[in-house]
Length: 420
Image (cartoon, rainbow, N blue to C red; front, top):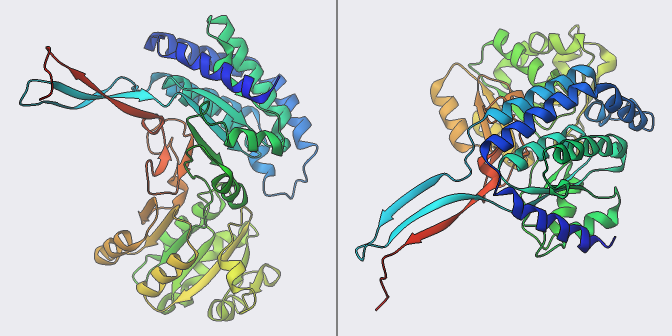
């Protein structure tokens, strides 16, 4: 079937979603959660097919992998979304004009949301749940690495939709080809909004190719600054959690900035990372301290002038981290301005004034004080599952939940008034 015909079917099906009641939406999502847990073995077989084609050392392997626990967590997230308050239909900014025209805004769906993503099969569930809850149809374009997993997931979703007498065209999975991505990004009149979820190359391609509106998400070169007045025990916990909780996700710590007056504390700050074999790219001062410590020599690499830009500008997605020594909070801010991606940044300090300065000056969607960047997540922020983490300033910013998938329209009620 020609791609535009597929898009047209999704667009047509999207019009039926506004007629569903909140009870209808909740019931379907709860049924999908149950079905997910009932079909764990089938989903794992499909996922094993994908995993067999990927090197285990690939940073994307962890993102690609489904486990029984992860599928139970996905089912829990579906139930959570089902019970969240729905912004759809919310009325706000109501007013009455001097001529007695009554105006208000009402939250409405975008219509059709397209999402391009890589080796992340959980995204198929997240996107469908959030879109369905907010009355949007969705066009999914997954990567070839996760194609078997995505097809099994979407097949399950379609089965549940049919059982509820809802058109299964409200969700569509495109072929895992480069050509399909290009056609999706130029589907003017069919797709209202595109959200890319992946690395910098994918996001850049989408931004440069798209003729439909795009919200940039995902890519994160993430920093934590250990201030002159930081607490060492707290710092060690925050650094460990930020770096190693799950290394392949976009909120994982990539670069630790350390005040030069606290450089002697590096061995204590990094002791938990040594136990997890985290590789460290260290500048001269940090290297000198670490090379004389218990940190394993084979895990310490020096940053040189030739490698500086590459190291500090990398989203590692692995058990690897960079360290940069700075002489002031201003130098830390300069480094973040140069290498940060606008995702998540953190400061560890006992100084409220330093924390406030950092939070005011850092240009990122999420800025933390004495907490790890691993909290940048829709579920952790109380949004339920997220459709992405926006790193742009126009429109949604940070974790995008239900409200980010709605727009609004003006409704105007009159009594026969005419304009003079």
